[in-house]
Image (cartoon, rainbow, N blue to C red; front, side, top):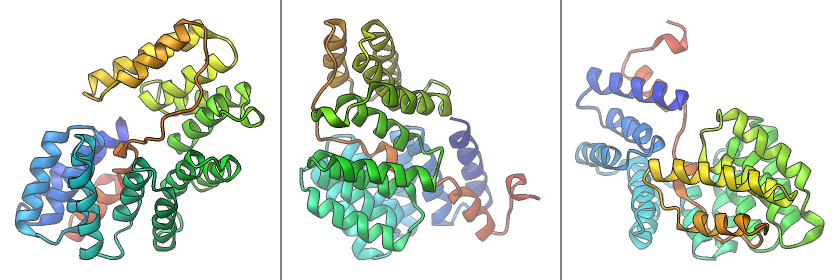
Length: 286
């Protein structure tokens, strides 16, 4: 969580320096959201919108929180509103794509990802999200291509590593399953996150189950569940999967749902805001 902690420290500094500047609060809301401090993030979103009702990123972040809380309709409405406010808001498009995927509207999700990619061709997460849309509609080759392209753009993208691992470990089509490749990708995701990221550990558990190491699979699944509960995230689905591993069965046919939590943080945003209000931190060379 080191990057998130630094981002939050920079965001606090921005608020202190410019308490009447909407982007200062929006930046801190984004950092809180990345740390899954949803109530604190929502408070800063409300402060942002009180100062700047047309702040598209704040509206996106509100949609992320509403979606996470289960208010999918309001979350989707926020993404639509953000796009009306700012048709070039990349975050709005790929968060709306997540909502469309979760509604099984995969073609529309892919269209939103392609719009986002035209606006920001270097954003690896867009490829990851489009990869999920491809995977969930059975286009496994295209999904792997998107996940691998994401890694070309960002070799340390943990979500791409984890996505490859889950597909290679759980794909219902045998020709795409490869337990050893899944284990390598999952292990890399865990290394990058110091074994403290639930998505990486869930992928590691699935990879171990695919190679028949069910005790290891159950161990890492339990650890992932602990992290989810600590963060206040639901874990019912993961508990069901744990029962599979404890019974000596691998995971197949992943639910066609993804979480908005992978889409929220732009790591350089706090620095950009600090620079705009005339302050540069030591992280950018001053």
